[in-house]
Length: 319
Image 1 (tube, rainbow, N blue to C red):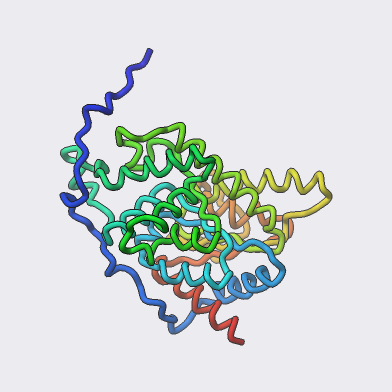
Image 2 (cartoon, rainbow, N blue to C red):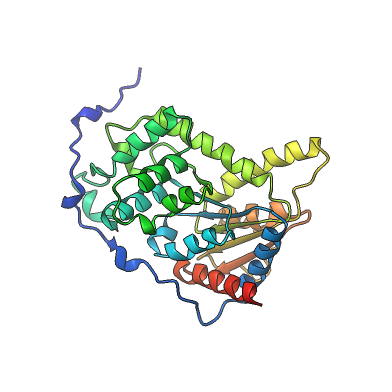
């Protein structure tokens, strides 16, 4: 029988003893950009058409989107009904939770891993209790976290994507893998609760994709979680649609990342290329739109691409 690590031996410290790399100064004001790239203007038009027909508009993200300080742009898009679902990983919940609670987030891995303090901060560990209590009520991670921030004593909940999603009754689905996130280090982590709540969110996400025909799926900075979760959920949705003589094929995908892709990304990279293993390319830009959809790729930082998309949408709505 393999030996389990003894969690009771851990020392968990308060966030007041951590040096934070980011604070509320990173949050951008809602300001238009001077221009928006043609690809983002095209996606903006498709988002507006999708919402006119009641189709889903999904924004999937890695946690660097939250660290980029574009919360006000995303919240505004949700408030205007232009984004109908957010999806992220466990780190999204952590950064959002910390910013809402103390107005600061992010630690130096290089510094704190030296003596094993990395990730072991008591206030952040409260997320484990939030998820456990939510799972007991049948909630997904996103809803549990959103309710906790919206209803709790969080001085900066106005910049919380989770609180905004809960306030607007928009799904924010969270897709975790055990051991990925710092809260999994904590003695109060219940792996079964996280698994149940994250699986609930996966089913919520799949339900959203049932309305993807004519819609839009966007991925900002998630190299593994977003394409993999989207792929499996799309398979489920198409499986049922085929039995009901429906299609989920005519939709738009957008990937915004820092990889240098060729101008023509309509075909997969060869298998002997490192780019073949960049899942957003082959999964979101090629394979899943090959029979009726269309795809766009924009290379850029999130604090540039998301404000540009917001600017393009605002201009398109005003025309």
